[in-house]
Image (cartoon, rainbow, N blue to C red; front, side, top):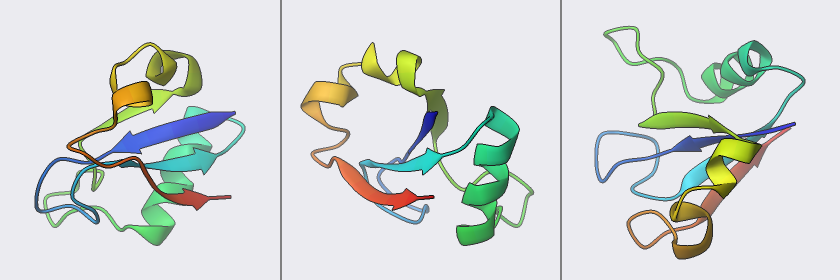
Length: 76
């Protein structure tokens, strides 16, 4: 399953867009994402929001982008 980690405009690994993580579960996706992009010093996931594939496809970001950006990377 694919999970989409979206970004805001500053203070995260990318400005806008999202990272796709291929994983068997939400927990596995979080672990894989954190291995590449460690949590913030406050202990939060270093992104704006996390969607599963079905949720993400229902957003405008899926077709229109997020702050003018689209997929930034894929983590397998």
